[in-house]
Image (cartoon, rainbow, N blue to C red; front, top):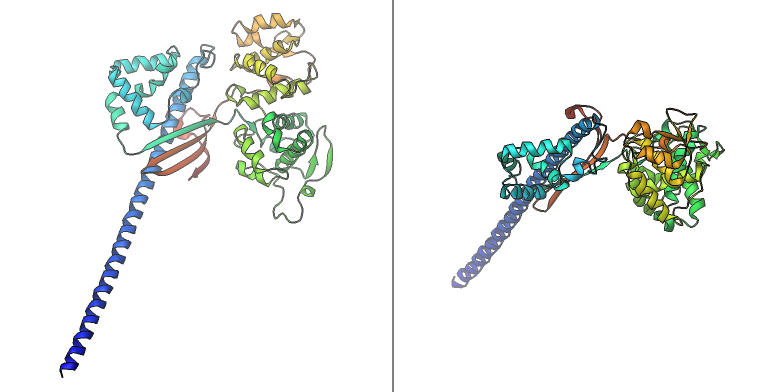
Length: 441
């Protein structure tokens, strides 16, 4: 009897220990699930906050673009511009970062800049573009009252915004609306060839001149409407599909690209070439003209070299061998921004090309005479056409600056959310600006 009782006590002890172990594991598992759920909820909350901070940054950038258009419109009535006065656009002068804006707000308050009347004076100065670059940066605080600034910046986390002009880049989609037999088709392709033959792409080709030319044809053929391989001077050579072997599961698009990533599908394109090319090209407009006043240096240099090589009225330049001279010309012509006629005249003067006045086409003037006319500051009097040139530089240029790519990033507790938008700001009402592209990371 005693032996049986002892055995039962042993079994009971085992059962109690097993129950305690089971409950311990169950509690730990519940705690782990609860902790994981709490962490997921925190991450979701931070991600949602980061998303709305990115949206705030996006709306703030729209406000700056709107004010920039107002300033440019006011200055245009006075036959001048921010660039002509030596200023960058407002969206470049004013930091699109909540951290920097908080610092500016603090500096403004310390300097006694919180008074609303002072804010109004600063805003007026910005409209007339008479303030210094630092003063112009402080305008971002001046757009709001002191209390509004404090309320606006009173949030957890930060946002940062990057704005890029798209009409200052080469359009890959322009050939989609061109006839391959037209002269503009050839010239537009030669601009891209000039880009790909620049020193930036030197190490990506085994034979830069030959391979770059083939890649230009492949890109244009991928986008243009016909099915033939189109070379320069209206020469057609076989079918586009011959550049893609049977292992490829896609066909030539024969239509506009939706994103730059589609370039990777083009025969001859590599990751290195694509990443180097991306800052210089766009798919968000179809104009063959470029606003070089805001363009990357490589794009401006490519246009200069192209002009000397194909205009047939000046000595051809090489992007690498004549890099110093090209850079000097670039500096000279960009000083004449934003009027395309003034830019072209500055180039003609620099290259020593005889020009003909646009208003009196029968009268030729010397380079020195054109130079004095250009320096007068009047776009109409500076307008000129290069005499005897196959290509006119002004026909490659645009003054338009309406399409912008905006990347707004919100950050909360090490969680980032980015919104990338391409927006057409042509209209007068910011609320009706169409979105060309929208993506959330």
